[in-house]
Each structure stands twice: as structure tokens, then as C-alpha cells.
Image (cartoon, rainbow, N blue to C red; front, side):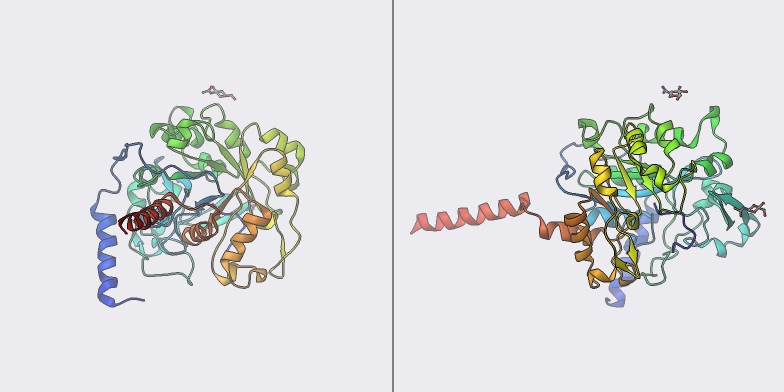
Length: 398
Ligand SMILES: *[C@@H]1O[C@H](CO)[C@@H](O)[C@H](O)[C@H]1NC(C)=O
Ligand SMILES: *[C@@H]1O[C@H](CO)[C@@H](O)[C@H](O)[C@H]1NC(C)=O
């Protein structure tokens, strides 16, 4: 997930080689992830619901190329409550995890001379884009590509190692996690996808999206027993898509909100979709909003300004607020935080009081929440009990 705005944006050699081999074997020799999930025991550690959700934005993409299986497994290792993804479609209607409308910035498509004639210009939500579009490639062709890191200032060593994954492979990663990990998929560019991909039986992209969630057992309203077993939030910038699927699934939905100058896909303006009237209407369909964080706290010259009333307004309508996107690097941190990402988390969690955070660095958010948590974990409690028992028994002996 990310806004549509066009400007958006040491170890020893032998050990590194080993890690490399391990990753490559782990990700290519295995037939992706066994489908359906092999984990069905029901004894897994449940989702935490007592503190704001740690939403791994495109996986741990601060470390691994975004939306790849290692990015997601790393995020799970690091403590994500939810793994987040953007769903697009191949030409032959297979749903994939991929953010951009073109393949150019985050894959090696430029090196594939066999596809050189696929370059196109399409209009997407009011902007003309030129490049290679996933909707012009079959899933088999997309699987030939390799993903690369978006930002030059992040680790480049995994470029060319991992393929694009399908929505179903993504779901399997979550279902195979050693504890309950939720999913947070976005219905991405639905208007564009429905223009370019023909679905059987007069269906829409959104119908196919819900079908896959149902196929893997995702169902239930927010915090219901079914939901807690396999938690999921469905997100979209397009209110019409969320309304369209309302009678197909009761899974909780989140309306994404872009920066104030970008209209929604239904051409509503920012001020319309954040009005009390609109929030009253949309809360029949969604449990929360996912705003670009500058719409909650604007910044000027990289310094925070007074917060807007968006959070209090949303909370007054019983809507959660899950802003995006939190990133550790100094270039993304406002000067107010003195180059300290923990100060940023502290501000958003304890002053702004958001209900979930989309982060590129799940590990950092998790550490912050663990270190500042008011209650100790069960593990810590049992260690403490053991210590006390040892002390008591040593007294008994003397
Ligand atoms: C995109 O390009 C087409 C063809 O050149 C043009 O007709 C259209 O107005 C352009 N759209 C935008 C939003 O610039
Ligand atoms: C959902 O509602 C639409 C009309 O809004 C209707 O065409 C469709 O059949 C309904 N689907 C289900 C599963 O009830």
C-alpha cells in the first residue's frame, strides 16, 4: 500500500555466502509454499489485540525486496501482527502481490529482452504511466522476473534472488507462521484492473479477491472467533470496491485515505471522505481508515505541525485509525524525532493514539512495543516464577 502520488518517492564473506545459499534454497528449491497450509493445530499463540497493530508494510521491506516471501517471513520472525500486501492481477487473472502499476522500478524487467515489445502507456487514476504493466503478462511470464529493492539506500544484496509471489502463496506464508499472523491485503487499482483483465462469468477483480480469501477460510467480523483464528483486514482506496464486497464477506475493511490533493478512485475529494457525513455513511462498511500520516499530522519543512482532527473524528465514529508509512531512515523521520524512530513510534502511539501502524521496519516497532509494554510477557512471567521457586526451595533446604 502506498499513495498514488507520482513523486512518491557486516559479516564475514563465508557466512554471507551461507546465508545466501540458505535463502536461495529456501525460496527456489521448495515449491513455494505448500498449499493449503500444513499448520492447522489451533494451538498457536493468538494474535495480540491489546496494543496497536504492527502491520508489516510489504513485509520487512526495509531489509528485503518488498512483497517477496523472505520479506514476509522476516516480518513474521520480527513480530508482525499482520503482513500487508498489494493485490494486482496478471493478464490471465492470477492475483499477485505487487505494489506498482508497472514492473519497472522493482523488478529486472529491463534485462528481459524477450519482453521489450510489451512497453505501453496507460492512464491510471488520472496519470499517464509508461512502462511494463503486470496486466500485460501471464503469471508464467511474471514468474520469470526477479524483484529488486526499491530504494538505493537499502540493502541491494538480494536483488535478482526472489520472484513475485501470488496472493495464494502469500496467504500460505501467513497460515504457516508458528503463531497466528493476520493478513492485510489491498484491492489495488480496481478500476484499472477491471478495464484490462477479463474475468469469467461477468465477475470483477473484487469478486475474485474475496473468492480467494474464502477458499482459505478467511471469514468473520472483527474480533469474532473465526476472525481471531485467521485475522484479516481488507483495505482499499476505492470506497466502491469496499461497498461492492460488503455482501460477500463480513471481514473487517479499512478505507485508505490519500494525501489531501489526491481524489479517491470514485473522484471524491479528501474533504468529502473525511466529513462527518461521509464517515457516518462509510462506517456501515468499514471498521477503520488508513490515512497517509501527513493528513493526521501535517509537516512543514520537515517539522510536525498541530495534528488535524482526523483521529478524534474517526474515533468519535467508532473507526480505527491505521496510518502509513513508518520508516526508520533519517530521510523519512521528521526533525522533531531527533533521528530516533522510537520517538516517532512513541508519539504516534501515546500522543496521537493510533490503532495500528504500517511500518517498513516491523522489528523496530515490535521492539518499541515490547520494551514499553506495561505488562510482562508469559515467558518472562514463567521465568520469574521459576526464579522465585528456586529461591524458596533453597531456603527450605537450609
Ligand atoms: C494520456 O495520454 C493520452 C494520449 O496521449 C491523452 O489523450 C490523455 O489526455 C493523457 N491523460 C493524461 C491524464 O494526461
Ligand atoms: C450483493 O449486492 C448486489 C447489488 O448491490 C447484488 O447484485 C448481488 O447479487 C449481491 N450478492 C450477494 C452474494 O448477495
